Image (cartoon, rainbow, N blue to C red; front, side, top):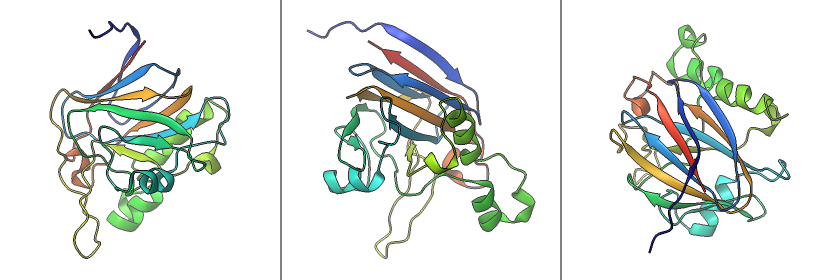
Length: 204
């Protein structure tokens, strides 16, 4: 018999916007791709000690796979589990391609893109609310982003595998601060060149 869960937070994050919240231990966070093909960049920190934060390297090494999906345990550099992916309707999420910034946009797409809003700016906006700054931005997760690795090691950033209404569910193993950039990228297909809103639901 499945226990009934109660929503304690239910918010829609507009296209291109930041979002943050502390998800308490045992609570579950649903990330819902409302329109499909939207990348959701994410940083995780122990709420009790924000110097203890998500590490892509530790997570990949522990699970011996570069992709995130059901069963992936999202760990800090010291190996502490922050959150676990307990359900996933997409099946493949990225944690190696990083987050877009004004600098990377300029390098990849030309100087004329420098004015464009980027994930790093969203992360900084969210981080400031919790007393964090640029030096606290570390490796991130790209939920719903499809980054295949070619046989020669080349990373591809291609159309997403998600679809309208698809979601994943994360269970907090400890109280976890979650920062999100609902990615504003319009220069590559990670968002289908058209950023859209996502929904964040926390249940207890």
